Amino acid sequence: RFGSAMPSDAAKRRKEERAAKRAAKGFTVSKPKPGCECCDDVGHPAEATPSSGPSSADAAVSAAAEEVTVRFPPSLTSRQRAVLHAVAERHGVPHSSSGDGEARRITLGRGAEVVDVDAVGTDAATTDEAICELLETHLRLSRDDSRRAFDAPPPATKTAQGTAEPKRGTAPAVKGADVTVEAFVNRTRALLELERAAEVEQSEAVLKGMRPETAQRKGRALLGLRCVDLRGGLLGKTVVTLELASRKAAEAPPLPPHKLSPHDVVCVRPGKGDTSGEPLCEGVVYRVRDTAVEIAVDDLPDGSLEGNLRVERLANETSHRRLVQALDRVGRA
Image (cartoon, rainbow, N blue to C red; front, side, top):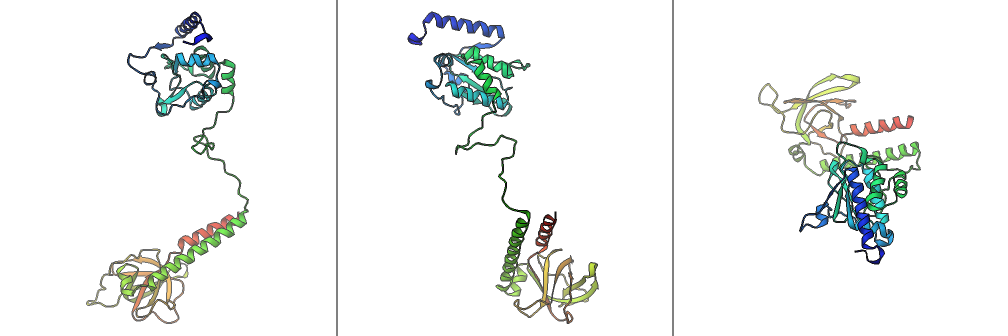
């Protein structure tokens, strides 16, 4: 089979020696079923990695890899499988992995004689030294070379682009940014201001581009309101209670459908004015009832809130203020 490189009697003696060693160690040696391809018997998947060719391995290792297939147990760690893949690739031994998760196992060689290393119930065959001995016994790989491979750092996996992938479970390395805390705070505050201005401009543009009746149908405004109560609130604020101005009975009618909810930022305008002028006051929705809406304002207008009024929802600046406060704390730290 090997031509003039190895006499037939010497090949027989080598096979007999390997068979004796396997029997002494308790390994299971099986033959492929008739009509079955060897790659199907050992479970080689489509992901099998091609060897680097006979030029990267000596003749003895290549011959052993053509005669024997060694199937390692799933109890090997991912690091041990990675080292075995690297050793096999370096010596030109065909190698592949099959299974998922805890059932993942590695196979070396592609010979008809299958050596199934069964390590169920024992860890003796899963140590680095035991693996090195198995490689020497069945694939004629140098034990010293295998030891050096296991003692070296584990090989890094490669992505499709050829860049090293970080080990699973570890955070990728991040290069230090050449920026100070003060510069970061100033830059982020400027971006937040731009974001806030864009939100306010968008909200005003929406209201300016539609009639008040359309804004009410979309839930962004309430029309035909009147102020029925003014009372003091927490932190010096004034709570303004608004109800519908038109009513047919003593009790206030329910408000039309709207999207106002507590903590929404709103403004109060005259019922017949446009959206281009300054509002009478601005505040935050304090409470929403079926027949009334209560707004907490900081400053009341110089004149009283009389006549027909409307409430419009503005851009919410609560998140903006909280982000700015967080930036201030970062800058002071």
